[in-house]
Image (cartoon, rainbow, N blue to C red; front, side, top):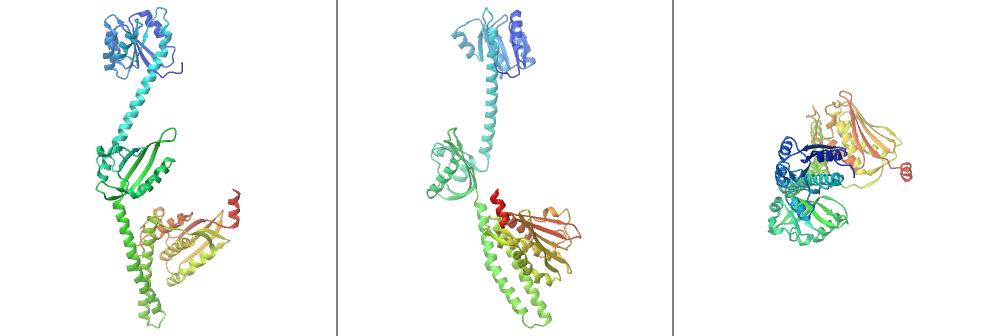
Length: 493
């Protein structure tokens, strides 16, 4: 017999010699604790004092028929197993014993061979008790899970392999309009006719083992209207790989879609109704600045041009931020020459820096080679860092932009002599709309560094900052290098 679980066993037997023999035999099994009672009265006392896993109950007790005692014991110890010890070896006696609630029975034999069978009988009872406990635990967990599923705010629909509804929670009733009793056992009614092909494709994917999460789709409601939902779909499979059930969790995303449409409309409004007129103002101011003007007029035109540039930058930041959040950022990767990238970025901002009496220069471009990424977005990220440094560096300050290749990557750096960033603020500099303490006079909406981080990460890189108050800041972008040596190393791996 295999190792048995620990157990507390009560022997109820009026024959003292039989109690001794049975106790000695059962104590051979490690982990079993044996207690004895010689009458029904003593048995009741023992049971009231402590619980038992298995009770060996002699039917012929002096003060009670053991069969009568079964129901009383099960009421006191519903989780216990009772093995009836009887002298009657008949199917009728066994059936009667089991009907009364006993888990098993054992016929007492004059040659005492039944004592050798005791450990195996008790072990079977203990295994059954363990299975019952595990089953009860599973049922309890399933009840909790079903309660949670029934009460969740998401629509949960479970169908069989033929797409007939097996489960339909309250949220599904609210979202789609059908009551559970109207759809259970019937084909799922929420797929619009023109979406059947899409639905079949999704089911085919989960049949192959995929779990589809947050798929935007459209479902049909009882009144015929359509509702936009986010679908999570999975399949429960049989051991042979066939589908047992499809589990669909659907969330109403009408509000989210409405917000997205409002955001798109607002972005279009920014582009057409604000950005275009601002561009006209900026360009006209630039043309006026090239003509002969009185000093006062030139200062006025310069202020107008700078204000237009600020508005244009705010609009650009908002649009790229909205694109990133919507997951619509499109990259066109390629080999980007690092030296040309750095030089172009510095040249683009040189006038802005000079206007603030800041020295902006290229410094430390050492054998940079190429990076692999979207040139436009990398230029935007590097430009945002330079523009940010110009904003925070005072007159007479210096900004150095460099790039160096190290260990298969290119490290861009933008070093300034600005006020620096405190240790308390450094962890949050890349957060959206984050403005540093004391920067209220600085133009911007707090989107620049947020955009840098997302553009760099989209190109497979990372961005970081080192800084101390009073000692300036160094922002660093690391991007994967793309050069012959690096490709050769990649090909060897």
